[in-house]
Amino acid sequence: MEVMGVGEEHTFLLFGDVVLGLRDAQPGATSSSQVHHLALRVSQFDGLREQLLLRGLTPVREREREDSRSLYVEGPEGIEVELIHRPEPHHHECDSPRAGR
Image (cartoon, rainbow, N blue to C red; front, side, top):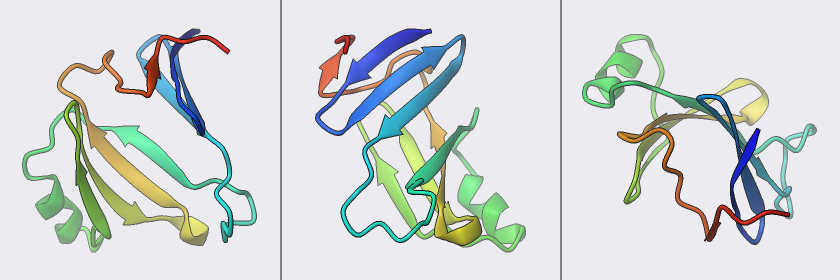
């Protein structure tokens, strides 16, 4: 395990090729488990929206960052599922990259 970055309210950990983002619970969170969202990496972003719509899933929002693009769908119990594409999967922007806790 490697700490990829620590921000004011989150920590990103790297387990092999898998990134685990841990975020503090937000005030007023409605999920009883306090899970805000689950992020799954996808290998390709082009055509993803269309694939979701064909399967009856409507993206609730989209986000484009410097190092990634994401589509979000509503999952079980209101937990968002983020489908994220990173051209460079080992690069993960954070407020304080590679800082330890």
